[in-house]
Image (tube, rainbow, N blue to C red; front, side, top):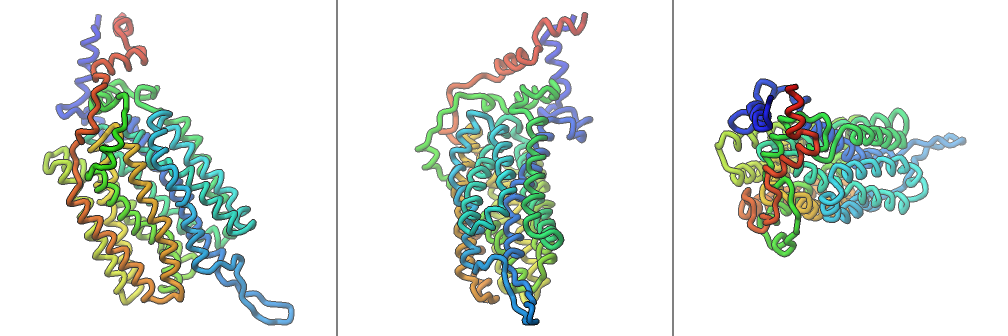
Length: 496
């Protein structure tokens, strides 16, 4: 008869000395449910950014000059939507008016009703609203702005929610790689949606952009509901070995009565270093996300179809380098080459310095080829920053990570509001000199973020983040095994 302790020993033997699962099956990542969660989160972020960036391409088609031949043979030019650069700036930034409102509350709710549930609702609601975008645009610019604000409200919960998911699913030594796998979806979504939107607009008209991506978003949500569980103990397909590995890796941080020390959070310099780094990275990202199609068309003279393809190249570089940066960061930690603080600082600040250099290179580029190379490098190297600040919440306060992400992403949303409007006021003619000012500002923000993060960042759990009321790991395992029907009687029956 196999005793309970013997069964636990058998499960333990399937993990190596470092606490990892048996290396003989480690390459079969699809059998590990935490990687299924990461893959589905990847496609979730894919949809989030596809739904967000679609208007950046569509607005080029909506406001471009079209040749109109009158009955008397006179040739004139007209635009379907006669919006100047200032109005376009407000339209493009309107999404972020709503997006900023639900960051903190999204993180708070995620820890109470579940990150998985709220994340799915955020994507699905945005997809449904996207289907109504052509109708809102034809009703007027005010209606379109209000719709985009509402989209932002729902999409605003998604980033904080994913940290609530990782607080249940991500072992500490896999945080970088699981998080960066998911975040890579943001850039992959940008890569695919930019040229796809341009082609849809050219072949079927700009409204098709919103119909196609809205339907795909709803399809993703149906898969998310069916395939993903809130926590490992609720997943019917997870193996006992993986469940034990995740549970023991998370240890006392896995299940707590959470009390938020708000004063300590808002006076913590490591927290503010993450906030400033996130703000800096997003300034450059949102500036290019909303303005790059216009820059390529106005200064480099690309047509609409080519604009979509070329605008996607920097994000293609990011989607390739982001998962690699996560793998490298975790490898350095596992091998003990550097500690957590050193890894976060080197990755984040190294990326910001590189982005500063290449943004200045873009400003002074003398040809379209050099300009595109600099932009690709600036965005692509930003992947290493995401292996720094974006995972840092889980390092300094694992149980508060979703709320910290909500705080950070609230401030990091401001660039999405300010940058398109500022660019709209700067770039009016447009001239290369005006665009140089846009790139100067972006480079300065990167440099400031680098200096602040290097000075104040930390990879250690903060004293205010340590909770006293904790369910001990051994007791938690007992509880989970009882829920899954793994008790003494079950073990005995296995041998009968």
